Image (cartoon, rainbow, N blue to C red; front, top):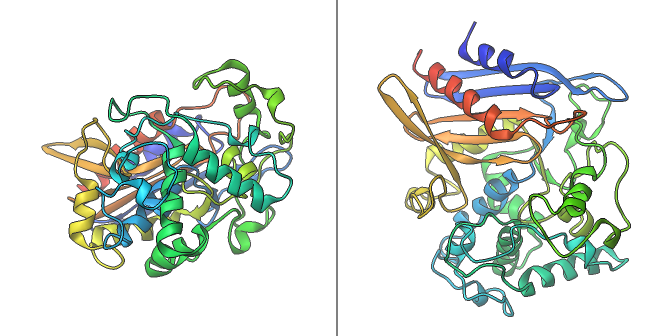
Length: 368
């Protein structure tokens, strides 16, 4: 029994389905347990199941694209150079570090109410640029989806392409991520009843509707009655994030990607290789420690210790229950994919699942 098996066994009560994988450093192992859906129909999780990436979109799509565009977009460039009318005198680096003073969260669908989907997305883009700041810029880290909505717009401005097309050209094709796309799963995963399928999520928009009703964890001057398009059905194969789904049609710099564990492993190994589509010097600049603990430019970081080896993992979690990270010291990638929102009652915290999973992967890397 490997450390991965033990870790997955320990996490079985946290989500209906769990997949933990590590590749690199002489290890190539994947452990799968449980179901991708348990409500309405019980369907098994497989190594090929597609997952809603949620905020992993920030690192794979948006940060990945910006790194590929390093000759055109510098970290110290003012965002206003690309997005005239942006309210803050902030740099690209400020947005990547979550230090631009933006709102932590804002339900754009309460304001962007155009019937036409394209007009609604344009209104959402304008809102992200013009929404007054909440904090003093540079005063501290305030994790914000809005910053990555804006960075997605920067990618569009520089490439002259819609974000989905730009990401496909800059990241997905060069890395070989054939089962990754915005707005909906790819191939067989698009079928809820297929062999691999897509992991089921939450019951409608209950989580965001509750956020508006309670003001927790992000108080905003909006309430549930300010939006009349709440989803009531089980979310399967639709983007979970309300802003990405309702305002941006499933395509945004902060959320909207669907992917598989295999594709995330490919992404991580491309980062470890330090070649196309990212130059080693650019990757080093993005991974360098920022002014706030655990935060690099677009990447989160975690420390993991096995024996005398303390390694740093760089990656990002996704609200729906999936996390990807690379350990450059080992040339390895770790992926934890779960459907933690597909439960009744309390939802397990991402961090409480990820930390033991990362440690287990690190243990395996020292067994070879």
